[in-house]
Length: 76
Image (cartoon, rainbow, N blue to C red; front, side, top):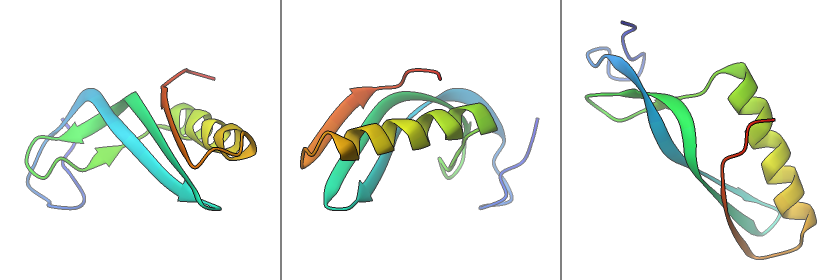
């Protein structure tokens, strides 16, 4: 198992998390995002594919012109 680079003690385990972003006055909340999660400090780590999907989801949400957007994670 990989060790957490933030706390240096916890082990990373597969799980899900909530991702939030505040961009251009729009708060985007994406639930059920796959991640490696530290069992000690709960820091989240995303792989490249998940990161790309999150960037696309945030951009689409900002373009929708809502103030708060809550959505479920969808793989790209």
